[in-house]
Amino acid sequence: MASGKVVLKVGDDISTDIIYPGRFMATVLPTETPQFAFADDAQFNRKLKAKEIAAGSFIVAGKNFGCGSSREQAASCIKGHALTVVARDFARIFLQNAINLGLAMVICPTIEAAEGDELEIAEGAIVNRASGKRFPIVPLPKARQAIMDAGGLIPYTRRLLMEREAAK
Amino acid sequence: MGMTIVQKILARASGKTAVQVGDVVEPRVDLAMSHENAALVLNQFQEIFQGTGKEARVWDPDRIAIIFDHRVPAESSKTASNQKKVREFIASQGIGKFHDIRGDVGGICHQILPENGYVRPGAVVVGTDSHTTTHGALGAFAFGIGATEMASVWTLGNILNVEVPGTIRVNVDGEFPPHVYPKDLILHLIGLLTAEGANYKVIEFHGEAIRGMCTSGRLTLCNMSVEAGATAGIVPPDRETLRYLREVAGVKDPVDLPASDADAIYDRVVDLDAAKLEPQIACPHTVDNVKPLGAVAGKKVHQIVVGSCTNGRLDDLEVAARILKGRRVAEGTRMLVFPASWRIYSDAMRLGYLSDLVDAGAVVCNPGCGPCLGIHQGALGDGETALATTNRNFKGRMGNPTAEVYLCSSAVAAASAITGVISDPRGVK
Image: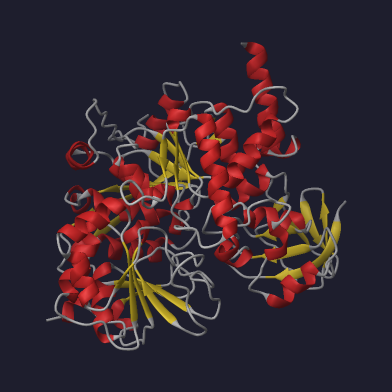
């Protein structure tokens, strides 16, 4: 099962303005957005850009992570660094954007972890190896899981398009 | 069992007689709106068609609207090049509802859609902008989506995997006191519900204060419903909706007026009395950090902003002009005004509001999103404070993470411009 270190711990209501500040919105392509991830957190952004943060590392957040703007850059910039966000819960559009990009987000209402802790995604739970505690994961609704399983909304839509064409 | 207006809209758009909360449906889309981020949508759209051997064509060019508003005129060559790419795509696909950077038809997407009659009661409207909730003011089910989701809509014509949302019913009775506005009501409600209190839900507005409110105010309410996390806000359409559609939006064809059933089931009911409201302020750095104005009165303000999709309409400009006419914006404070569309700009010019504002020292800018999201005009300096009629005050929102943004009505913004500190419009003689 996937495991990694908590590299950033944040609180409730982390907005997309914090994840991907509006002034970088002219940059849209998923190949280019990662450089501006958490741009106003100079230290964290620098570590990301310097590749000092391992793929598969975790961001641990409180409630309503990704609130605010619908900008998809907020999801694609996290995907570009191969980070997983474990939050107590997520704002609707952000979570959907992540799923649409095939980026796993973990809804874990009771998560307790500190920066530096090693987390493991186990069957139906997050295990904090530092404390030894298990925190149950809320599974995605079936319809959304289907998009994840397809690898994101682009391949999912492509398949539907071809099915509809074939049925014509 | 009765259905809410949104359940009815989703049932009809999904070809069903009834839907229940939690059902997963794939409704057809009546209107799909994007702004500059159409540059990303078209990238994702073209990717969907890769390897299919099919030419990438949108499902219905008449149901797509694209409005440039976030960075107008372009602030950088990068933006200009993105806009150019989108223009070429629009031409190649035959998309007609395109509002370019023009002084006749331009403006902010959430003003352009209603004032051009693109939004009808009972419609399903999606937009690649979180404030797409605005269009619930006309009785549509309207919500924000991301760019890849929009690419899927452009391809298929429906939106996949929509869970029928539950609804919070908000009844607002009583009359608004003088100098208290729909903005104060929605800020108060967001404070009450919290920033995620309506996540995955619809906020449905009822009551005599809503029935007596003009469409402009309803647009403000629905616009900011997303700040409580709501998927959508909605005002069941009525005579005022019809008046707006006929007189302002120029709609001539028949219009349906869907309504919630009397026995519809609500997740929660909130009762408010407009008569008890006073001017409200959302304090940094979350929109639900709402206080009565008195709690922050006297706070020094460096930049006042009147405008945006929330409060840049003619009545907002009228209120500001009335307060500022014959007065001056305080030294040490700058005031920026962004009408929500060029039509509003032109009306405000004819009615003398713009000259009243300019004579007082305000800077009237071209319609657009302006400084609201910190990407274009009116960025804040280190440690500065802004008081704005916009919709968000997140850290970094106006382009500077060390600055602070307070949110308020147009009346509070204008009263505070005179003094240079947060001031109560009820005290302006």
